[in-house]
Image (cartoon, rainbow, N blue to C red; front, side):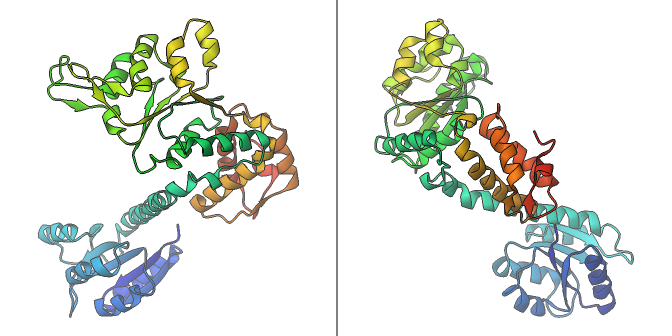
Length: 389
């Protein structure tokens, strides 16, 4: 990542050497001889990283660091000094400095600290971007629904927004987007301001599943030294998502009847029933009707979950959605990789549309990610896709 780096040092020789070194690393560098000069610049040109000399006439490095809290909160600050003490380092960290370096003639030790600072900036940006766009990505208008099959699913989702209590069952092959659709349903219902709580029915043992879901009272089992609230408590006013419920151990299936039908549960070791306010959404890559017929899934639980069901079609049956989805992923990875790749060439389009995608949307996303890493031009080519799937 090319960073914008500001240098503040009252010594012209050292300031110039630092500016030259950072420029040779292909960063954008601006140098200032005082904190006062820096302040006027950051108001209109906020940097990623600021290197500040600790001992300067006028405002000291510590004073500059303190003032930057209100002027440029997002910048990462590294303090430089020729006379560092432990006390200085501790004070610098308290004021929010990223690191504290001793000045040397050859600037030894600067590069690894600078690289860590830049990586920290990149990570902060990624988190901020994800947080800012989290709500947007689950908006109904963000669903790719060009194909008739997905338009029918979208219509069902709209209807579900009007009833925030009815249980919903999402069925479809692995990778079709059941988790994503569950979050869309939550975000576009009257429960959107409540939490979205997910529990895996595949990866947890029956004992762990029960403890995590219901919570427990003190003394419920060996090691239960205090009450612990479960995911059902955490899902209050929101949505409880039971991911891949078809994999749930049969010993646990019967214990879900009450939480789906009446939204009532009891903590392990507890004596009282607790009434909850949440919507249950469950998903399964298995055909639960077939599982019921084979005796592997409880019929009474299936009927309660199946109050409203969605079947998400596999990607091979919604070919019209492949390229729009691919372009959505291109935007995502373009931001992540810092690449401006604007289109897909016709041969690559044909390759994607003719592929069966056994891994569905998840596989398409992985293919586009790898292709974007390989691409060196402004258009994604068939060559970039070669070896990506």
